[in-house]
Length: 315
Image: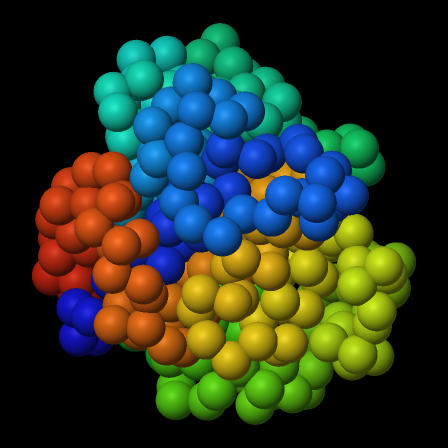
């Protein structure tokens, strides 16, 4: 896979994340009154403009592990997640400042000796977006190696299960990975959306599929904004990100729409930003946002290493 396709998604993800960080947890009403229009800092967290959060940190920790091992080594991935959580590795400014409860608990489980694929939580209430927000590198792997639905499901299930083992979380990751694969095949977001409605979901229960019926059976883009939730629930995050992507025609408007939905702004910005980055490319991202992104060269270096490793990864 050519390097720029990886850069498009990873940088698009990081910028969407950074745009959302300063207003995370703000209400939609407050953002309607004072919307985000550019990259700012020192809002919800005491970090400068352009600083990305745990969403991007865990994504690049996953990439770094794959680059070093040329395979998906679940022990090593969890060790790197632990290095981020306990030692501030893989951060934009040298300091971790955000973490979801489910991810923290799963990393804690690993710390006390739980096997990696048993670390993730399985409670119905443990279906936040913490595995969805970091799953993008797996989409690149599945596309590069032309994996079947079955093999894609197996890898997505295992990578999600490191922190989120409930089927609802796994299904959200699977839908997203298949959407990104469709974009990498050359489809635009509209065709990619139609494509994900047609693929094999037979490995999932009817109850889990019902949670995603607004995406898979209806047309999520036709819902009114007041019907779109922007919480950290994985279904809501995926719905919101796709709604933003399908209702805009460039990167800037996509991510600003995502962030100004309020609530879990960094993750919805990151997921929408990754898709828009792939569709419109880095050149479609405003220059001032690219220039203002913290640790951009570090992210680009990891993208280059990942591009080199991708064709020789052992699966």
